[in-house]
Image (cartoon, rainbow, N blue to C red; front, side):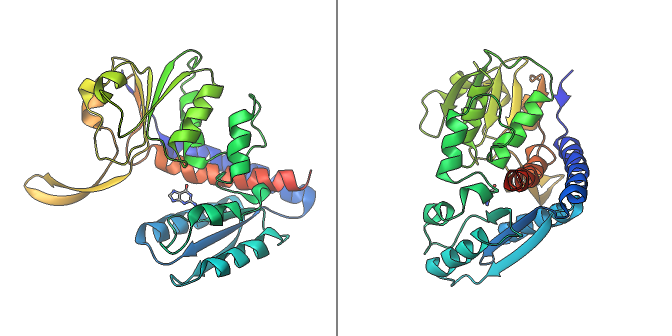
Length: 294
Ligand code: GUN
């Protein structure tokens, strides 16, 4: 029987644990973790994510320092806000929601965040730490989506050692850090991407397949081998005809109906990887807080 991995439930459990931990930290230190959430402009998807992140943070007892800036904000103004937050005592984590307006250089902005407050784990120092660290990651700030995927994989209680893991996608946010995390679990890791030749045949070799390319349902049932574990990071809004009507639908990078029949475990969209990302952001903020009081 194929296991449908319930990301919603795993993410809720993670938040429940964080809530308890934060309450204990508050008792001991008389303060709680603070997360600064910075949004520039009004990209609709960003507003949805920022709202969801804020709501979840408040629920677990993290305080929110909210900064919503106008689209025409200059890069210098944004950097100056980040420098202020870097020095603000009640801020332990800083999240700058991406994408930023075209007149800004995202990497320059991410580089200006104090690495010890880097709630997304995107700063080059944290990227480097992830790539050179050994097994013990308890105080590392790790990109949230791939870390969420790893938690789901570990929850399957299978031995990851030596498994062939194929990651489709080479983004800094998901693909590259995902590959690093799987390598640390002693998987044999292949990173595939849009220019990879014979992608379907390659995917057929995967014991674990992580799809993070942003192309709706590109991974078909005949791409995967029997018993593979499928983690679908894609969130694509498409229009689909359902019972003669055109409806908006959220689908992943994987054809769920086709792959579900062959996989041993698979994440659905929605309700799979998505909810894990936010819980891992709250985890990073709590780690940054604990690191600050050590
Ligand atoms: N935009 C899409 N995903 C993310 C994320 O994980 N963090 C931030 N800051 N922006 C994003």
